[in-house]
Image (cartoon, rainbow, N blue to C red; front, side, top):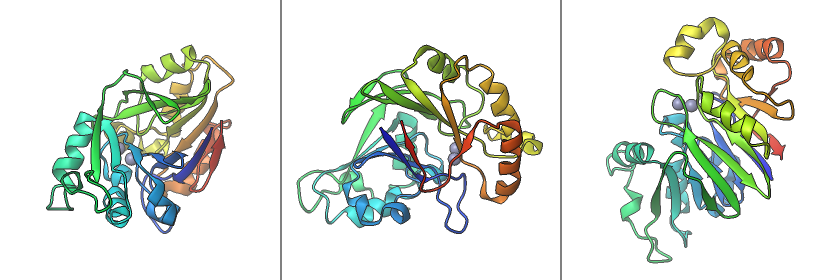
Length: 254
Ligand SMILES: [Zn+2]
Ligand SMILES: [Zn+2]
């Protein structure tokens, strides 16, 4: 399995893209950086699994559906917790901010352009050839983390998260998960801001990682805030020496 990191950062600045992972040619997790990263390849995307409705994770959905609409033969399936879907429907694709594409039929088929699929935490399902398990994260709004596996190997993607015992329970139990992709957003001296916005600092992630009872899991971090990038990279090197920092365009082979 190959995961392409289309967007790795917790904010937009210069050419940095926000959270967006590609797990096969049709499927993304989060939609922070589709258009710039994929160009014409965005025409192949039919499935987007959303962690939550914060802007940095959904920002390219409106532009993507707008660009691909006239070429599409299949709807864009948007998967997420019912609260995430409700937020996207009520606050973004609502005719005020952007057209409500779930009520517009495609030109090339009778299907609606967008199809929303509600996911239940802890209820696994199959998508293409992936086995996917969504579970609740600990963030300021309802957020799903995902375990994604294919042919007995896979990864756990926390999305935005603060401390969450469920991550370590799953990782310690399921040895088919070879990779953890999680987040560090702020340097440790900003711990008050991190705590109130439910994000990790290098120190809080280091404390959390003590719950991991395996040494065969590769750990990657993303969602670094671009305005703190230099100090974050230095601190992660010091506090989390075995953890790799993801950048836009990276690929993880699992
Ligand atoms: Zn975020
Ligand atoms: Zn968030």
